[in-house]
Image 1 (cartoon, one colour):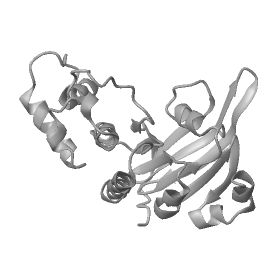
Image 2 (image 1 turned 30 degrees about the vertical axis):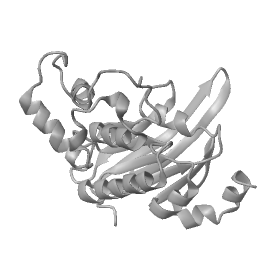
Image 3 (image 1 turned 90 degrees about the vertical axis):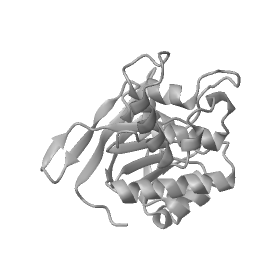
Image 4 (image 1 turned 120 degrees about the horizontal axis):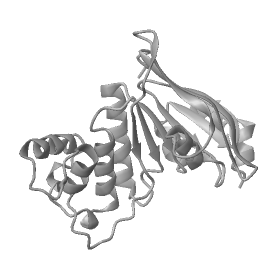
Length: 239
């Protein structure tokens, strides 16, 4: 699908230094609406650090700029985030509704259920085929089920940019393919911009609109074919 061209997220000159060590240097790229940008690189290349910088969770230089091209002006960006892992105890009594409500509501979740919010959450979960999980305990969910819940929370109020850090690690191949099909639907239906870190190069080739090869700096960016055919890719992933 062609990007709609109505908005663009610009990652501009992001650099991260920790204890005088360069972790990232001058990372600059654009993510257009309706586009899935997948970030690859060896272990220690700075992939997760880049996501944290975009989310403003670590100290960095540079900026994230969101441009509404329809209005021809900068706008405040709304970001959704799905982490790589979430530490959940198997015996915790919290239900999917409880967890979801704690993220999206200002009201204490230990009070009785809000019927209106319950129905809104159920409707959001239905987009990801997870509405039947609303009363299930979070600790009893499979890896694939939990990722659907986290994705539903991250997109509850449709973000301009969705960020995912290896979201299907520990999920079986069928669940992984289902997850990426959902992402394709999100970017097509809502013109959502998505940045995703992945170590699964087969999935990158199959689903990415744009690929960024990272190793403290951007070594190469372009289509999956352009990046995978490059000497920079071969140097990063020599066997």
